[in-house]
Image (cartoon, rainbow, N blue to C red):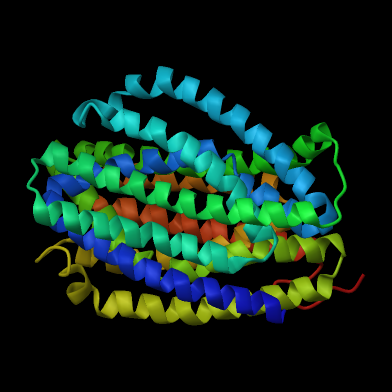
Length: 439
């Protein structure tokens, strides 16, 4: 337990610095791209996340779970098989990307080079995923913390230099912003690749045993495929959401360009502020997956229930403080981006969405560690259908518009949280108050 919280605190501290930088990045983007440019950037950003999920094949999750559950003598053999697998995946994804990505209509409003940035991102993400998975499973959270910090710090420095020294039109400015994102991923790849090679040389000198490649792939894919399916579903809905919301707002009577600007303020301002504390939840997720996997393998239900109790308490404390600040200080926070912005109201209405989202993230880690990825996917499917239906029904009403969209988002997240929580309690044999059930 001590190791868990030390690792979590290390990641949280590094993530706090990273999120502060991310906040500055979004302010720079808001001021340099303008309202419409920010809307276009935020509309394409979910597509980037979707490609990242496909390219990674959730190898960080499956490899970290494998490393946590297996002795060190098997690690090098497993990693060699994982590298070969990632090479094959990279070639396949690049071929598919060259055929599919340039033909996607979404890119019509962007610079012609934007699709090629997405293709270049594929091999970087795939190989970085192997190194991330190993360091997560080996509980070497220092490497992960540095990598996460480097990514945001590099992007901020590049944005500051380029926008200070050069002047761009809107189309070129969006391309430059996306290039800085790609460059930051490349820097992280360089750092993790060097660290990974050094660790592989160290493992080579220690006692090791060979594993069957087919068995390794089956073990990794048993986790990667359903987890990737879950992440693809989340990323796909996230990628669709900007255009779905814009369509809904247009149906309510809002002009197309105004709808895009409103979404830009929702995603670029309200989401940037509201998701800021989620770095704590993501830090818990990274540490929880190998910890829960190891404890569940040993059937240590006392540790699992005790850990869940502490995670829920930590989330409740920081989440309550965060949403209190969001609600009562919404105006000064949103004014950092734009003056007199409707994002003030959006941020206040989204308070339930952010609070329950902070609970969902570590609970997803629990479900993965407990081998309940399929259940997590079904929960996401059911709640997304409910959420999108409510978003469309309420958001298309002229008297609600964006308020109706936000209400639908809130209800979906609350429902997802309770479905996750009930499933976890059943698996670790505790009631809803985390008291042990009598057998």
